[in-house]
Image (tube, rainbow, N blue to C red; front, side):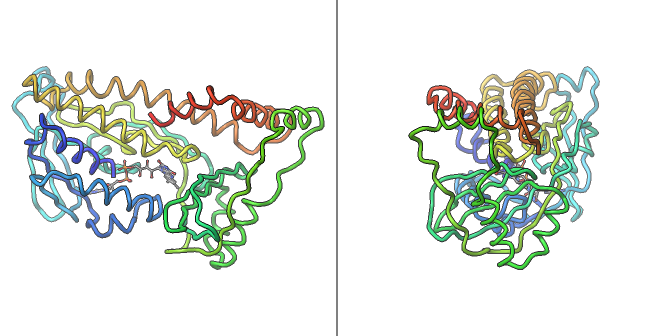
Length: 357
Ligand SMILES: Cc1cc2nc3c(=O)[nH]c(=O)nc-3n(C[C@H](O)[C@H](O)[C@H](O)COP(=O)(O)OP(=O)(O)OC[C@H]3O[C@@H](n4cnc5c(N)ncnc54)[C@H](O)[C@@H]3O)c2cc1C
């Protein structure tokens, strides 16, 4: 998805519109629109459809086409200045392409990242993210997230009464939910979304009551049926590449950084990479700089994006730890903190602005 966004961004800027762009994916456009990637059909497919409409007419699309190997120039001084060598990408069907800049946007388990020998730091959360599409009894336009002892459950509206479920939970519960019948799954979601939360100790309860006074806490809508395919789950991990670039090579999106879905920020980080790289390439075209030179990619793409991504990832990891199953004072102080932010519109607005990039 993030790769399509970059092609669309380059095509819509007059400085880069005449670049020769080749977009390749191992899935066909129809498969991509039906959503074989982690986020279930509707949200992903709507985004991909919208992005596909903005692709430049000059773009060459190779879909489906799978990457088999890549060859990149080394790190010698000559190469660092760009050098004359191009990057080569070989496809499983035997075709070879040569390019001044190869951009990897092949997701969290990026094959191109391993082929480029770029290392990652990663840790597993011992949780699985379960995704499904459901229909609600009433159409709604609010994104709901409930923090359960096993992890957060999100109900995200799409359109026409459909919503996506993203449920981070223990591997055991994920397996149980995947094996349940459609009706069993709907009942489990409704129970998890609707059941009243545990008691808060009396002192904090009265403080919370004070903060929430006059505020009607609305209830999430009832889920009426499972739509589309059965629920599927994926292991959740934090993964960050130590380098995003090499001579004639750059990584964007989940290939460079993958995060816990609790704040729904994965795609936003990828889109921010796209915006930064597209802007840098436009400036390079204007100035006549080699777009594949290592020093150029480091300065104009890797450094600014690593700074921003690392701070967002650290914040989200902290949030994940705060919401890791826990009881007692810490959990109650966390809830009190959230209630306090909730009644301070200026602070809430700033947080929302930051999250939206
Ligand atoms: C359970 C779960 C829930 C999530 N929920 C949210 C959410 O609510 N909000 C949010 O913003 N983000 C969410 N995310 C994260 C979001 O899915 C990713 O951040 C986003 O999809 C990353 O986009 P991408 O283009 O970098 O990678 P991907 O969407 O993974 O796309 C990679 C593309 O590369 C192609 N590809 C892979 N290997 C090859 C190859 N060898 N050759 C050719 N093509 C190849 C694939 O076909 C695919 O089209 C969630 C993730 C998970 C796991």
